[in-house]
Amino acid sequence: MKEPVANRRQFLETVGTASILVGSGVSMPGLAAGADQKLALDGGEPVRTSLLGAFAACNSRINEFTGAVLRAQLQKLETICQGLRSNARKVREAIADLPGLKLRASPDLEGDLGVGVFLDLGSQERRDKFLRAMRAEGVLATAPGGSVILPTVERIEKKATVHPAWPSFQSPRGRAIQYGSACCPRTIRTLSRAAGVIMDSVFSEDEIRDIAKAIRKVYLALGKA
Image 1: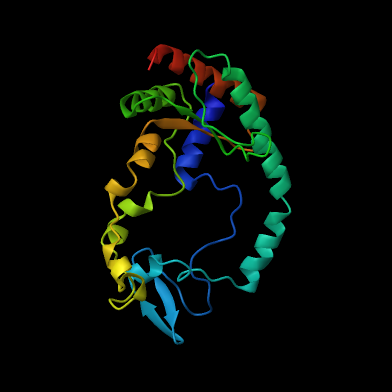
Image 2: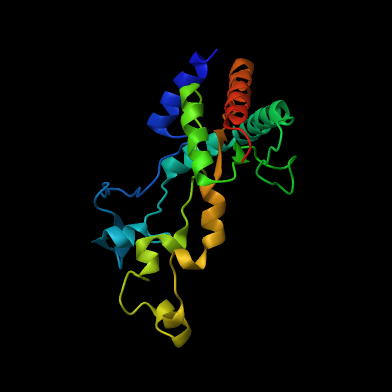
């Protein structure tokens, strides 16, 4: 029963994994922002700069139409959460007896949203083999995503701001701060060896079984870490 998961994989690779969509980016009458030209407002006048567009809260606008869609979508939220938790729990239970299995730790499994079932595979090399083998089984597996390791982002490492006189890094303490990979080696190592399968609230029982079966097959084929 690999076809349903394979089809869903192609779909998710095309449009992403968002369960609730309401639109994003700038939403203001008469103004638009393209992929190569972010737009924000400064004193009521349009200011176009890729850095400013990426800065926190500078490209977030919502109008009454987007708000109305959001209100309708939020009514689905509890159903989506219940589906995610249920499906993640089924997968975890189906692979729980694998020898040496190390799942992503959670302080509250019952409250965990269940967005994904992630494994610590011991090393980046073993993680990469796991990802390739899972794809060969027709199941989309992925490294941790959804955010970035911010200190390693070039503009943050260089402390680039929307204006050279931005006060955050003008003090002696601000000038002394150093970003980059050297400030978060443990995080980088942890993420580099993790991989898992993103859950969907509407996965069928067959899809859940296919996912668990693929994880079991690939994990056992990899051998000990």
